[in-house]
View 1 (spheres, rainbow, N blue to C red):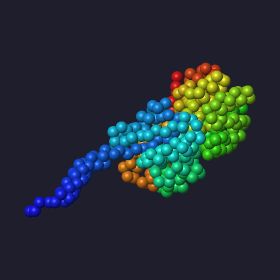
View 2: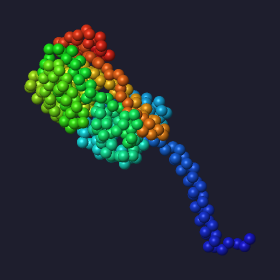
View 3: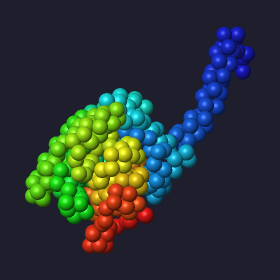
View 4: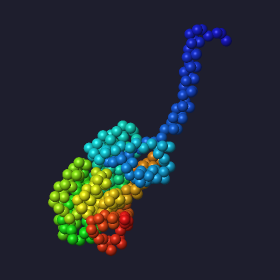
Length: 337
């Protein structure tokens, strides 16, 4: 074979160099592809770290589908710190992060913010208001958009809560109702149902507004000046995030109060009637995991809790100088002493 000229030799060496670089890079690219793990975004009003049982339940749901945070999954948490107006930007940030699934655990405000941020990324929500009325889904059994999740029916439970409250406090006629007008999707049906239930029970319902954490203190000062006989807290994610401070305010003003989540009673509130947030977070994890495994949103029907718990705090009852009727106590699912 005749010797290569200088130009041909240089071209040959450059070819071999490029070929070697490509060959060396192939295993690295393959390993990178294998190690790439899905990312889900968690959008909420308040930090899930403040409620370890919620985080544990979310992990349990994901684990049941074979996903473990930090091993084959990454969870990006976005929290609005009880400021509802921050939710749209937080949702948009998760979309920019290109998460595989968005888990929305901040009621209607978070679910709507996620919906407006993306029409393609699957969203799994937990929501108190009717998701069909909110435009999140148009079909419960086969969602036809990119959203599915859990519907708590909290506004629909208001009448039941009011009846239970009246059973505990049959002599109370003037009830203050704390609501968040910034969350009209859940507030309007709650006020309507409370008013209707109050009318049938002979109760006078007076509404007090609080849109922010700061307004909660002001609302309590105002309602206390009206001297109501009891307090009814409307279902709202802002109020849920402030369970400890709201129950402390109720105690300061010696107001018997009805709440929509067990968290309030654990924090010292009098009574609650509603679903389990631990169960809902487990289901959020299950649905997110099933989507990561390839199931379509349309194959995951909107779920509704089948059990709602009545929880009573006997220590708070005693501090308020009240007694619980034996028939009501017998129906309590949990009694905190």
